[in-house]
View (tube, rainbow, N blue to C red):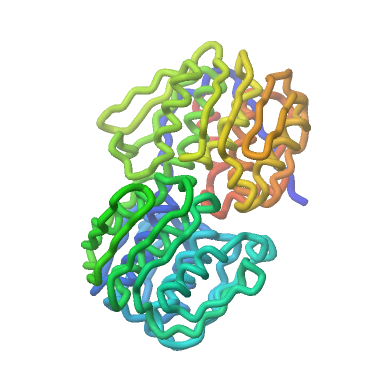
Amino acid sequence: MSVRLITPARGPITGTVHIPGSKSITNRALVLGALADGRTVIEGALFSDDTGLMAEGLRGLGFAIEEESQAERFVVQGEGGRIPAREARIDAGNAGTVARFLTAVAALGFGEYLVDGSARMRQRPILDLVLALRALGSDAVAPSGCPPVRLRARGLAGGMATVRGGVSSQFLSALLQVAPLAESRVELLVAGPLVAGPYADLTLGMMRLFGATVQRDDAQRYTITPQRYASRAFAVEPDASSASYFFAAAAATGGRVTVSGLARDSLQGDVKFLDVLRAMGCTVAWGDEGVTVHGPERLRGVDVDLNAMSDMTMTLAALAPFAEGPVRIRNVGHIRHQESDRLSGLVAELRRLGQEVRESEDGLEIIPQPVRPAVVETYGDHRIAMAFAVAGLRANGVAIANPGCVTKTFPDFFRRLEALVASER
């Protein structure tokens, strides 16, 4: 097992960092570009394990996708809602967007398709999506309630489908993206509160940019009439989730870090993590070039509901040991079903670092204690690895096990972090 020792910063970190493109936006742009009519050019795209799996999965469905990684560019030849391949086996790895989105895309086709993934993916729920697709006319089955999913597809007829909101917003996003290409009107009902709702908002915003409109009566009801997507040139924003680790580096060390290219009107809900950092005492300043976070001398504890930006749970948990008071994170029980059981993993690793942690079914409370040296287990989870690397900037002896797992969304994370630390010496 490889282990990476994090070199602590000698003082407040100061610098500017360029963050790769958003994974969530890149993968949606790939899907919408494939479903559109004509050629879509995606600039500033993220090249990582997850986006590679999405591109390869779409190729398996018969779409032509060119990639220029050095230029951060994908070129997608859309087929106007037609799925070229009559048979495909899609490997989603452990990428939830790939498994869920491409299951829905395959349902538009005419043929037999299999969507599968890693051992962990075979533990991640997909039944709600499968049942909704069946309600819309698809012959899709997932006997275990998790991948693999088998589809004998004959297009989507349309109609009404209900999806639970409490497991993952990706089910709703998957259905929304394919709904305009159904034969008749689609009405989607969300049962219960929708977790990570800003990701569904992101999907709706991108659908509009590709020419599709959705009637949204409230957060629970969506109506989509038959229509077509239009190809376009599309620029991907920097990834706000990935930016959070660099904002946290400023917060942990009392430094000043600027993330270039991120705008106040970002499509991404995770930019609201900056509000949490403000509550902890950080100064946040938006400018023409990006956004700057200046960490305080002392971080305050906070009590926050992170349901709408649950990926930020790991970042905040890794900052918590350096706060002056307890940090409580609520309403994130759904992250137990993601790349790992993130709540259980966070609790175990915070305790390994000497923290007092109280775990509940849907959150945790961290009572800060002196950080002791430890090798942090990552459970193959990129966000746990990146978050605890930030803790190592402030505390001696923090090492990250299996650091290569960051290739899922941010392949050169450690290089960029180390370059930022080196710039303050």
